Image (cartoon, rainbow, N blue to C red; front, side, top):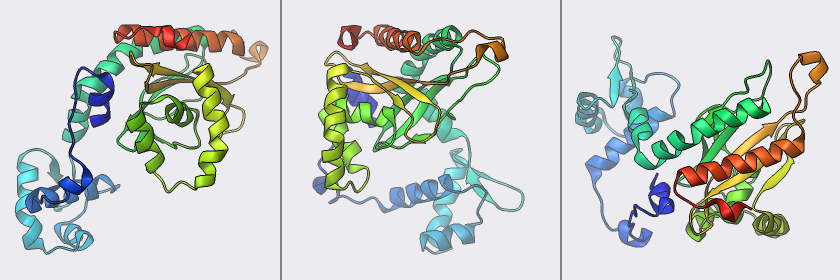
Length: 276
């Protein structure tokens, strides 16, 4: 989340170096965050005993924190005593101004793009060291390929990841490189591709994960030309005679995706000439 404060430029979140931050402790806060992070990884509710066991703490240590989190609406406790996250964190994340603004500006453009191409599209943004699908628009056609909202995207095996590795600001590039234990050889192998992306400011290539899909990706950039999001059309060819639907050429899809990315930039107040 702090990424967007940095990238949009109008809001800046100052953070202290890791070595300085590590000298401060807040045990109660840490316990609360441990509980939230644990429950976020679960597919179902946990009992107090299970939470204490997984966190390697006593029930007495977590009892007061559980009570406070429930009272503040972050947890739900069912009749059997099972504890799970409420929707409060999700609601807070979707009210967060930079992401909310980006989605609000991008979705109408994405809807128009999907209608024009009869293809789906999605928007990927960095979130800390991860990439996530922040917005999507399904194809209006009978069939299509759609990426689930909130899906984490692999930095090194996606067109979105490659674009951001090439075009994001220096601090975000470093975060992405540090998100995994990267073999130094991988940097060398990716160097020519990333240099090509910096020159072309786009990436059109077959999906690295799913056969038969051509990913058409363009960056959304700030005034400095630094990418903070990526718009992608996972292009599927079709036999239009069988589907009774218009088939859009790859060339037209590339042009339409570029114009859509430019339109989103313009809506956000950033000039789109960096994409040309």
